[in-house]
Image (cartoon, rainbow, N blue to C red; front, side, top):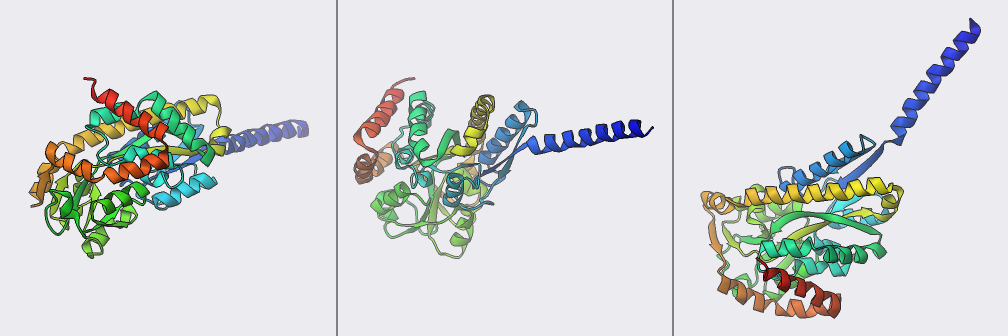
Length: 336
């Protein structure tokens, strides 16, 4: 009898040990970004998390933290680099503080249209180069999230030409390209984390900000800024970067799943952006916002005005990478 009890006890102990090992074997991944929960960027991140959990049969659980819950973009990028955060989606402008070459993605007025931009950014050669630039800095690049083409809003007057930005305090992303672009256009760029924009506008700390009109309506920036200009000046494509040490701890199959999940993520994100942007102008006008859409001629005036930005960053990125990227844009823009 005693022997049977001993065997039973050993079986029970082994069972609970198995449960403990199984529980401890589960990998929890923390993924932070600054997009709001109602934005397609977050919907894409949730699609990423769902895909990873399903394909790994629950071995990996991705916990998504939106709206800067884990810190601003620069802070989260530092955390990923240090290994205290597994992964983040960060605007190219902020990532450029760590990996200067990725800033080329967000040069102003560089893409003639969205279709061309997507073709360039999804190009395998382009992505391989971005990944290579990220490696020495402790990041593994696996894809993008997106906050669409950016536009401008302000509380003072319509912006139809570069001179209209003269002296305006415009909130910008904490990245060198954004700061230099608005300085060159005559504005007073004011870097602020995304979650602080509404209060800064309301308290008149800043006169305006740049975000896709869709995002501005969604985040209620147009409640306090009654002038909007559809400029499509910068495409905010946000590289998704993973801590290199954590990445190496994953199996090849798990890494493959992460990359597949990243493809699902950007597809979900872009589809949501396209749907939300379709009626952004109408929604803004319904809020009594004065909306001006730049003409092709207007865009060319702005493009010429930011030529000093191109000249400066060509030197920073290097002629080879800059010329390679621009040639990709020219090539894809000629394709139907």
